[in-house]
Image (tube, rainbow, N blue to C red; front, side, top):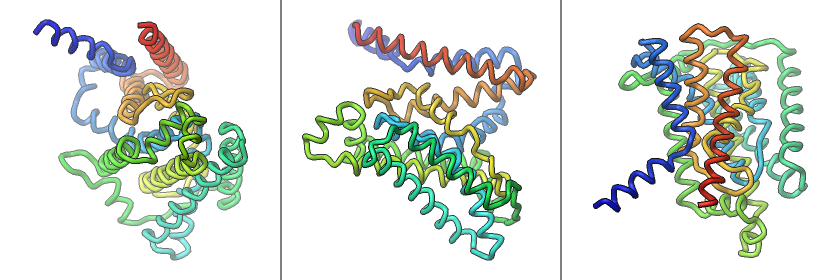
Length: 319
C-alpha cells in the first residue's frame, strides 16, 4: 500500500514544470483579481487560445522532427487576405476555404522538400518562405486590409455549446486528430524516430523525406485553419494578422516540454504551453499592466519556464 502511494506521489512530481507554473500564475492572478476565475474570463482565455493552439499542434510535429516552421504566421496572414479576396471576387466561401487550405498545405510541402531534399536548415528554409509569403500578401492588397461581411463568419465565431464558442471545439477536435496521428499511426512513429535517431530510422527502411514533408504539410494545413478562424473573427483580410504567431507557437511547444533535439514531447503538454502564454497575457490585462511592460514580463516567464524544464530533464536523466 505504501509503495503504491509513493509511486503515485512520484508521478505527480514528474508532471511537466509548465503545469506548476500555470497553476502558480492562476493563483497569483486570482488573488490580485477576484473575478479572474469567473466563467466568463475562463471562456475568454480559451477563445483567445484557440488559434495559437491550432498552430502550436502543427509546430509540435515539426519540432519533433528537429525542425521549426517560421512561415506559419505569414501563412495565417496570407489565408485571411486570399480567402477574403476570393470572396470579394464571387468565389463561395466554402470553395475559397478549400483553395486556401490546399495553398497552405502546398507551402508546407515546399518547406518540407527544402529541408529534407534540399538539406537546408529548417530555420533558413522557413524564414525565406516567410519573407516570400509576406511579400506576396502585401502585393495582393497593396498593404491594406480587405473587408467582407458574411453570416458564416458569425456562425463560426459566435456559435456556442454550454457557453463555449465553436473555435474552442475546433481546436479540441484538431488536438484529438493530432494526438491520434502521433500516437496511433506509422507516420507518428516516424516523426518520433526522425527526431530521436534519423539514421536508425533510415536504416529501418522508413522514408525520412516523406515523413519530413508530411510534418511540414500538416503544419501548413493547420496554419490554413488558423487563418480561416482569424479571418472569421476580424471579418477582413489583414496582411499582418499572423505576425509573431510563429514565435509564439514555437514558445508554446517548447514550454510544453517538446525537445528540438531528442524527438521527445507530445501535443497534450503543448496545450499547457499555449495556456501559459494566454493566462499570462490575459492576467496582465486584467490586473492593468500596460503593454509596455507586458512583453518583458511574458519573456521572463517564458525563459524561466524553459530553464526550469531543462533543469528538470537533466535531473531526471541523472536519476
